[in-house]
Image 1 (cartoon, rainbow, N blue to C red):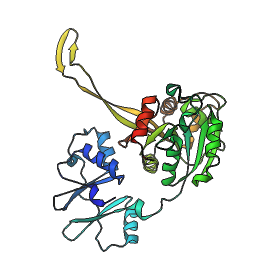
Image 2: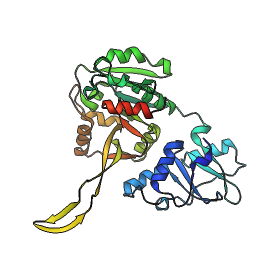
Image 3: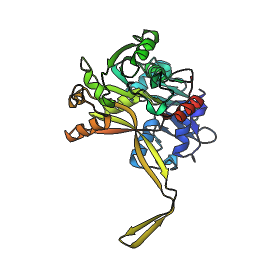
Image 4: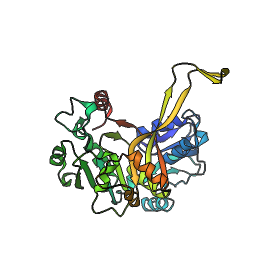
Length: 345
């Protein structure tokens, strides 16, 4: 990816930055003048903090621009660049000359092989996929083919690229087909175990069957999600904020098709023409502390929102991780068709 693709002009919006990040997967955009003089940077984390603070996607990048970003010189060695990024816990660093003109961009992921993570990733793959009938009559939903390979394989290979090596797949409906396809995971350079549900236990209930109990935070994802989320960044976000449970959420915007009349009793207070309603929706991806699993009753049905509510009532800190990456829940036939038109192999 040419580093110039990460550069945006000063009049760009947050939406422009999100689109460019999704194109480049660099998790950064660099704001510069026409002659490439550095003005500042906006990282993936800056956008998430801005979204949590309520900025609009149409807001100018200046609203979240970081003008004091660390930079590297063209003479800096690869080893020094890696050390600088690690010391400051950053994943990207612009390279500028003596006039602060951009000449390159160091990406930590390009310079080093991702460190293997001890954390286990649990993939919920036991559902019947009734909304996808007749596709799921003889095939479990996670094995449906998108861009030449099963949905579940997209999830597994993406997580492996980020250093995850231990996987547990929760299975129920047509689970033997999933076991036959993935086996012990050695074909993908990972290790896979299976949780076999005798009855559907929900998106959290299967975790009550984990033996032995995990010692590290657990990454959990639904088995029908296609996304470019950085699982490693989600895990680091969870650990940084000392949460007991973290839920990835998507910003969903819906425009009311009618003008809204605001009233107080029978009195008209105001008119709002076709307002846009914004809400955060559950993306089906989570990080859980091992202690959170104590809230589950072995073998008892529990969906993930139910688990979060239990943790909240017991005083645990539950937080959201705002996503802006491409994301799709492959739940209906039209979703499967769309995924096959847009997903990369």
